[in-house]
Length: 173
Image (cartoon, rainbow, N blue to C red; front, side, top):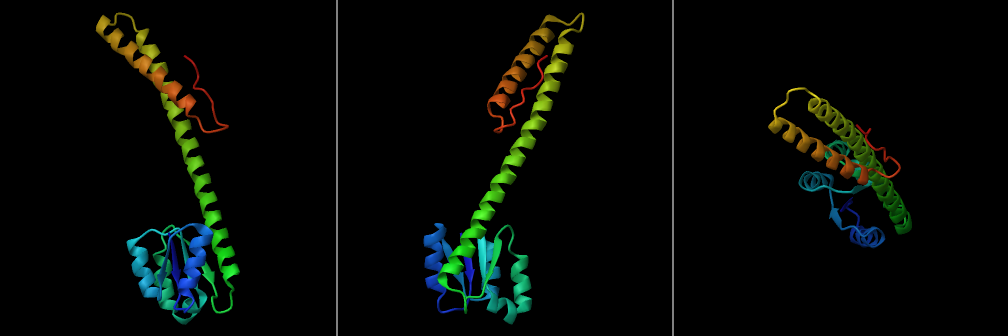
């Protein structure tokens, strides 16, 4: 969802063009206080701010910007910008944002995979070492073997779900 903040008479025309270009719903706020209220209530992909408002109401602009959250701000002077430029700038910002989110998601997945692989390897090693302990009761051996098999299964699941280009099987024990 995109928030368009402008008192311009062209607001709804701009909103329709942005919706068509991005496929995102567009909400129009005619003032910065209204935009701040909407930002507190919803999460937006981008917030298109009319530069006129930012310059005319610096205190309200600061308050609004504090509530952006993860939304990407796009400042446009709607008094002199054509519809094509508005659409081009917003589309570029949205594409950049989606690309950055995808990269962050892949990095988080890779890090989690790496951490889990290390833990799985340690569990497998410790279960193998525990099984070598002399004098273990048969019930304990049976439970440790079950743990070892579950950990092996988990390792296979991790290997099959490895992030692309990062498949490093856990060290076999």
